[in-house]
Length: 179
Ligand code: IMP
Ligand code: MG
Image 1 (spheres, rainbow, N blue to C red):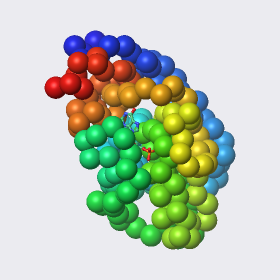
Image 2 (cartoon, rainbow, N blue to C red):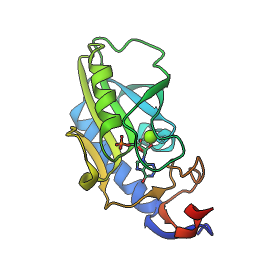
Image 3 (cartoon, rainbow, N blue to C red):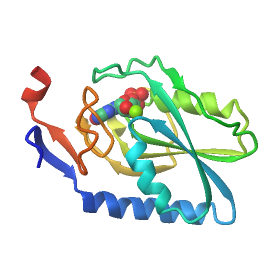
């Protein structure tokens, strides 16, 4: 375990199994259809790369990079698009892939922005959901794990841009935040 990690919440094995479960649901729901996965950078890059390999459909991938957090731990609700999609999603089946839903403002913004581009369908997927932190109602179609009000890192999720490389999801030792 990394020296800054206090506790592992989800192991590599648990994440792997959960991704199989999510992909099975997606495969069933979109059977016979073409799907575009929209990965939200940077947090979802590891999740989406494992998810897409478990999807057995005609599937494309595109990315959007947004920022709302800076290097702090609270969402501002102000979202900025740093990189937009390469292609139009008009008339297509679209699935937004996020790392985590916290207050819900980021996902709400994404749903509003992307539904205005007239996709055939628009659904949402997040590996983690901090349901009790929600400040705005937002529909998440595929959720990996519900978690308590904890700040987590690893498997793509960062604190101050670090720890994304950890293969598991864990909680940092309190002294790490004091640095
Ligand atoms: P929301 O707009 O409050 O739902 O914030 C969602 C975004 O905040 C996610 O895409 C993450 O980038 C970030 N975030 C929220 N909670 C955590 C966490 O526990 N660890 C790392 N990033 C988080
Ligand atoms: Mg994010």
